[in-house]
Image 1 (cartoon, rainbow, N blue to C red):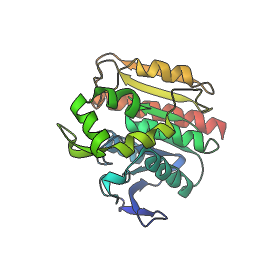
Image 2 (image 1 turned 45 degrees about the vertical axis):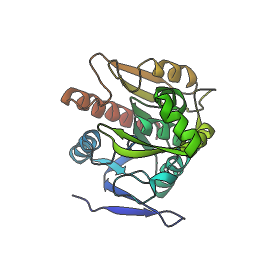
Image 3 (image 1 turned 90 degrees about the vertical axis):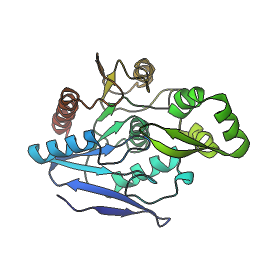
Image 4 (image 1 turned 120 degrees about the vertical axis):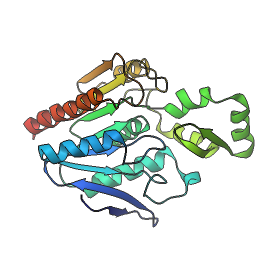
Amino acid sequence: MDDLERLNRPDGETLALKRVHGAGPTVIWIGGFRSDMEGTKALALEAAARERGWSYVRYDHFAHGQSSGDWRRATIGRWREDAIALIDSLEGPVIPVGSSMGGWVALLAAVARPERVRALVLVNPAQDFTERLMWPGLPDHVRQAILRDGEALIVEEGLGEYVLTRRMFEEARDWLLLDGVIPVAAPVHILQGRKDDVVPWRHQIELAERLKGGDVTLDLVADGDHRLSTPADLDRLVEAVERNRGQAATLS
């Protein structure tokens, strides 16, 4: 296995990452909210990278996994900035693969670095989730606590115990994408579970309508949930990445 590497950030924080050296555009795994780079999909892509000779990087967001950072200082803008810094640290074209919140981050990175991003593969992407999905779904007493105290403690099965801050919700408004045209010229392949109870599949209809630049493929998985981690789901993800790598290579 490749060793853990660290990307130093200007403020002294570090991003933990692992890479597979290979050919072609670098596939970058961008994980979801409260997820780390040791998840099922990230490891499935790593196995595919080793088998197929891809260049591949997976990493942990600020305040996630093995990366450093104070969770209370975590924001969409920070996660975006780190993803862009990672892209800037690599050579050549990239194909971000964003899952849930990582889909939002991947889209923001593609807007910021259009000349580097050759394609996007998004898995149940949660663009604008703070405003469109999470805030409306919180109990009223939790929303009131966030507004009054600046934060609230959340205990959630699967995500553990964590704090939601008012700062995260307010800062995220600077990065909302669904209120206008999203200027991504690269092809975008969206894998979305119809039975996803976290990010409804209709959330992706609006995304497809906002993406005006390149080809958009919306792949609705009939029995798919938010994880999309069954063997069939993982095969579908790997093949989507493989197809986009091939198309990117023809454009090089």
